[in-house]
Length: 384
Ligand SMILES: *Cc1c(COP(=O)(O)O)cnc(C)c1O
Image (cartoon, rainbow, N blue to C red; front, top):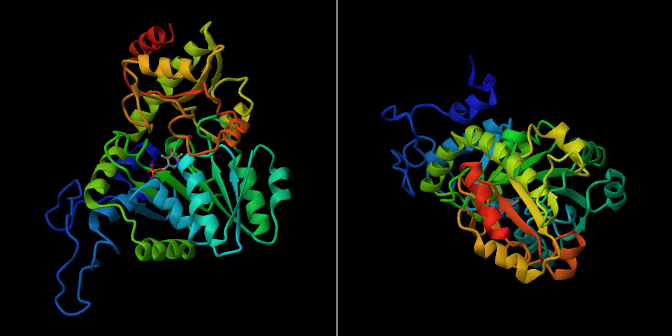
């Protein structure tokens, strides 16, 4: 049986992997080296210099390609450097259409770094494909989708947007950080590029900052590899090793994240002091039908608004949590809580932020894999 035919839970462990050529090590060694001996100029075993390629990174890149049902994986120093590489495919004058409630750092990269090089970004709600089609003009080159969105948990229909992108000859990139390939495989739905902050669920243990891109098309892979090597924001060998190790348990962790997420979302929805809970698993979630079609389950990311609360009230709740840690980031085994308006989304102007629903009292949870009873007890004492 070829490793290509494996099911998802086997691919996380075996996909693209083989014992190390030197001594048969089952786990890829951490090749902590910058360079490789050559027998004659150009006479090497496939590795010359670790910015261009490193065996530990290659092992991770093969695993990434496998779990996303792609052909080529590229591992970067961070999620943002992976996004940076995608935008460097473009030229001055090109335009990008993007989700309006996207990760704050992506927004900052687009607006404050790339706009000054003559690339224009349009931010919009992506619930209507017709509305996106209206925004497309002769300069549009790329559609950038994040789904579920951060932190509003909107779900965007990847397959429909991919039809539009193919029709108009545009690239479609999907930030799959929140869903992970356990829940959603954008390349199967017609996307050209999948992007990850592997810092989150893929690594899964809050111990690395790593980014990833996966594509199917060889030409696109070559262009992105050229940028990865030319710009140099590569994932180091130690981080490659840790991320690969994280991926091996992605499916068991995600299963528990989803189970706990459902329990916590329902607990919050029934809570008298909670105004609104955002989680795509609720039948009344405006995009529940799309979520049911394109995702295999609904994940452990939840946002909520306490009733009648202010900026200060929300801050007090997150400060009172004891099992949940107040911290940036998400997707680790431990539960985290965040206050988007002052943390992850502080770089987005308040007016812009509130247009997409990121109000001052919004709280975001990354539900971990602890006992759900302990998480509920913690929320109960913090909400009061
Ligand atoms: C964290 C995150 C990023 C940025 O990734 P880094 O690894 O922090 O550079 C991009 N998109 C989403 C959805 C994220 O959560």
